[in-house]
Length: 152
Image 1 (tube, rainbow, N blue to C red):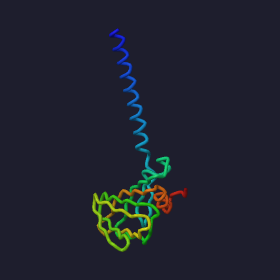
Image 2 (cartoon, rainbow, N blue to C red):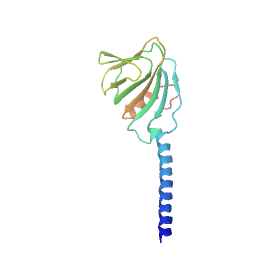
Image 3 (cartoon, rainbow, N blue to C red):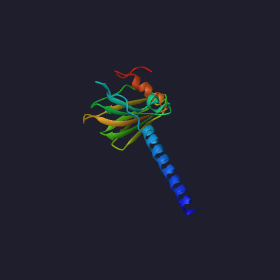
Image 4 (cartoon, rainbow, N blue to C red):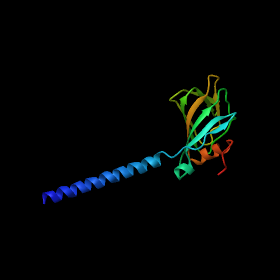
């Protein structure tokens, strides 16, 4: 009887271990889809979509790596969704509704729907950012304007 209970417990533990490993592998695969192609524009720099509708399977959020070239200045524009900018490297400036903000590594900028925004970089080299758009359709709209990006 004791041996039977031990075998049963061993079988249950083995099943739980296998289920845990399979779940971990599956979740890891869902957590780390292949990033999109590196899109390059001589004026705007580089953009690589990390998460978007194609990679995530839904459009709740889009995430991209963006490298702005030195001395970049965008035109004033608005977004239909929330844009969150996390600065990884360099000094990034954005003007929101006429008020200038300077972001350094670790800094976060937020652009709300309808805000008038202009992005700028200085002369000290490229600025690397992580861009997050909610909903993700906003990121799709941003990416569509880049050379090599197919319209969706």
